[in-house]
Length: 549
Image 1 (tube, rainbow, N blue to C red):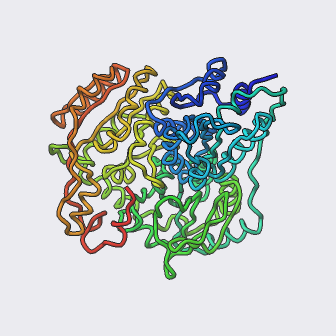
Image 2 (image 1 turned 60 degrees about the vertical axis):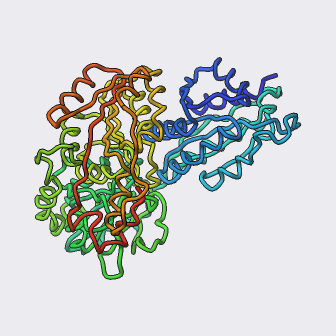
Image 3 (image 1 turned 30 degrees about the horizontal axis):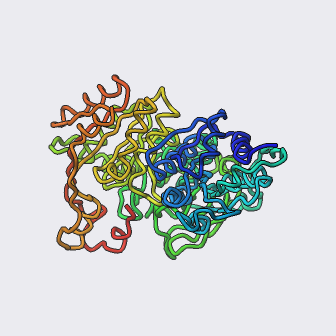
């Protein structure tokens, strides 16, 4: 005989789960004991939301399915935000929640909430395990669904009595490898013909290209010789040190890179996911679009490609390169625009002022980080970093342009630091975003991580304050009263530094990395009024006011 909780944890081990993020609860006592006896490392977080965000980042960075766990009722109800984050971002996570006993109700309705139905809209699948004998099949199905395209979160609920139930031994189901399908030859020939006919072709790498983990994308791009730009979440899919890189679209229009986008007559999108805010707006009279992805493109108001190549992204691009290499006389037609675009993007980085501006902050952080990993929270500074922070490998800049939830930066940085102890890892947060999950600083200290947390503080919800100003509205409800972040860090056992001049910033960051451990660095930031081409210009209400940050 075997207990349900032991069978459940064995099924997780069978799926390759090596760590699980979560918070203890009464309904999880059996699962907790089984975890204690297992090889799975339990990462004790301060909140269930933090656990969900860390598990999602673990998936994003490893390509494997993350796992998190919470108790019933109030614990489980902290998962939906993290589930939405994983669902829109396309990251594979299995979210486990406990529940009161389902075969009897000795506590009546105490803490009982229909969590399965709460989770259904923000997961790919949500199910309750009704028998211990079903555990192996339900766990295997949960991981299968979470991993298949498009990856995302799956929810499993296991009640206290099912976890404590004893049953006959049930065989686990071994996972098997799966190779994504390849695109059809007809689709590839059709796309190759359109690219050959184009006068000013342009490539765009989106979120799914960063998930593909293909090692051939850069080689395929170089073979075709077509310049490329990226969405925010497509950064790093192809190294941005390439002489074909044209920039990143931080906005949907009026960004510097849109000079090339607007002049293109054909855009080939590679791994674009429409859950990400559009990098450009399709119009009837605009450039034609070829969609290359593992899934067909949904028809959207702003995205309706005229041709599609559906299959493994890396293999599809390589097959196109086979057809097109040396045969595209117009491949580099847009390249003369490159120097001007990249020069304008870097404007302002060398102008010294205090408090620091986003451009100055970006310059210093980029110099200090070298080949490290930077995890961004969501805030006004994110647009500048998306636009101008050069990355040369996927997930070197961890940002979210899908749900764009504030508070994700610190948990993401914690997972990155756990997985990459030999790299420099930094989390950049605004003061508002940091305070949403700041208690997870204790988790980072408990784990003895090397992590630098840089707080860019303006004492406000900066994005919303700027939008109020752009709409000629008075400032209202956007001010934030901050704690002493240095003392806050020290209270958790971390180290804290307050930067009081621009000259102190780089040395403070360098010292924190050299010292090791968890460091919190507070730097004041100011957001200069935006220029007419930028996010919040007067008269551009339709696009700027739709920004999700």
